[in-house]
Length: 224
Image (cartoon, rainbow, N blue to C red; front, side, top):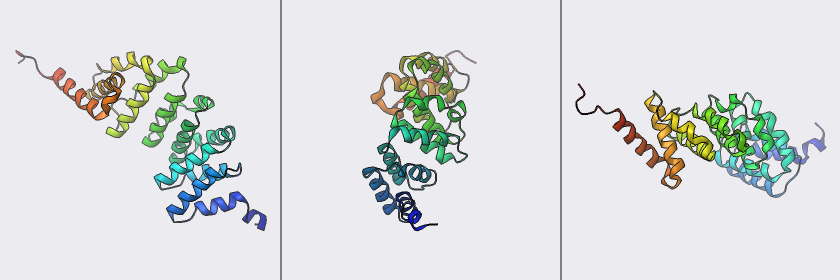
């Protein structure tokens, strides 16, 4: 490798982002976002796929959004096809922050149904934020397939994404409140609550949903 390659801005950035000290990596990402350079983008995106520290990843995303937005989107879109889950989830997260609607058509059904929960959450949020209004009903139907999936945090993320679609999601959520699976019914009721009373928060919504499901499933007086 030539001396020029060793001292190029991207080489220095890559080296600093590879250090074992997370605080150094955090400061490096911050600096890359303040003193922007087109050469930084591939390195920042590359690091997102392997960075173990949440706060550093968040700063890397911020640094990416500070670079040329068109170039950033062009480099992020291929990451959605990566075999590395973190690369997919971080690319989706960055695209959601950039808000470029070109990314909408790249959010595939496979991403929305991804087995990796971090990828799925990022895909739901990004799709809901970027989808044209005409696509809201179809997206709501797709997202509703995931009702009842996963733990409380995953369900909270899905409810928020569905709520972002507004009135277009209401018929889908309402239909799911009568689903055969009690877990789906509960999550659908909680989602409807979030949509109607966003200030209540998901914990209050899920507790109310559980109460409603329990009442509906309780035997009526006179049942054998």
